[in-house]
Length: 230
Image (cartoon, rainbow, N blue to C red; front, top):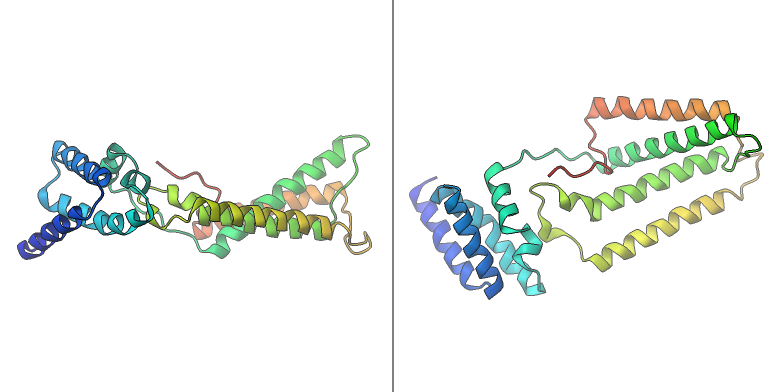
């Protein structure tokens, strides 16, 4: 980095630090000590703080603290030092398809196996219900990723995390849509919403999971249900 650029970063950082609340100033003070102890260079520290401070100054207006945005001092220090490789995010369509095939595979196999080996068991969902349930369920699980899980990834910009009340409203509403889809589609006459033979359901379930595995490998899909890596 050019010396003039570095001096500009340092100057801007100082001005931004003056705008912080006392709690956030203490966080930055502790973070600097932690980075010094880790022998991080002045340039690297300036760049790291220059990425954080504008966000912190903006978000503290809404009452959010540095700890809420960036984690504990030790967690932020580790994040700065390790600089984890950013995982390329899959498109929403691929995530939705991945979830849909997973749900279709699991439910088809479960109902097929029960139909084959559990005496007296009856088929609950017809083919239309099964497909719609999987498609809407895939969308619901994608929303969970979009509004919650993606902000738990290493290096995620937590300042963009929606308010929890908003997240809960969206997710609760989407679950109601999911349940309504299952209930309404179950009312379709069996002549249209055909109840499949258990053997066919097992085949469909296995095929759905096999296709999901193939697409996951081919397109390197990072599923929305994947646990964030720490």
